[in-house]
Amino acid sequence: MRLINKNSKRGIVNLFADFILSKINKTEKSIIQVTDCGAFMVVNGLTTSNEYLDINEIKNEFKESFGDTLKELEMSDINTIDVVRYNQDINTIHKGWVMVKKDIFVEEPEPDISEISISSEFPYGYSLDCGRLNTYYSHYIMNHMFNLLGVNEVSFYFTTEEDNNEDLKIKIISDSKIDKKSIKSLILDVFDFNMDSFRERLSDYNLIDDVLNPDGEKPYLKQDLLEHIILF
Image 1 (cartoon, rainbow, N blue to C red):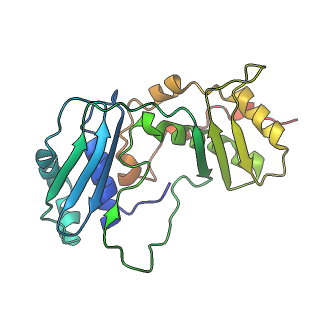
Image 2: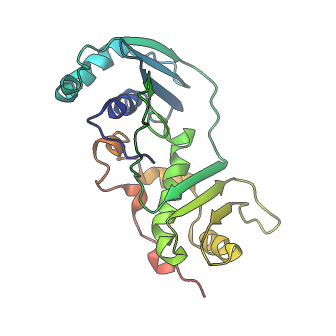
């Protein structure tokens, strides 16, 4: 995940996206994207919730909470355009590729050419069932495995499909010298991929802290299975 400087315009749009997301019931599936177009911010998104958000009220609360930063960035006068769609059909993301690195938050250089608009980006503004949970679980695995694998980057393919042995058909891509089949076998032996259980450990975690406090304690980085990470 990109390391977000909360005291930047990129930081503001990602922070605002997660801030709006925090106003939606956690049981709902939601994707919120905020785009800073200069004169105004477009709040786009979709959610399974049928409870309409008062974006203007949320904007004012956001300004009260982060007024100093907004003032410093000359963004105190936020005008918003609300195009969030409600009561949408959104499927839980059960499969797909996730690339993770040893360092969960990676600093990326800003583009040399000034951007006309800046949008929030995944996973900021995305609820757990819209890919964020899979990303967190991938970091959970990687945080246990990076010493053994000897690599800084791994890609995981999530799926709920099983093979003839009733093992998940997950895939792993890395530059590790360890045989891929051995890595996959170890991961399936140690990690149960019970996403409902993993979700419980995130119940008290405020997603907005991914932006506000990237160096803080993360429940998805606990190394509670290290004693089982053994490869013969």
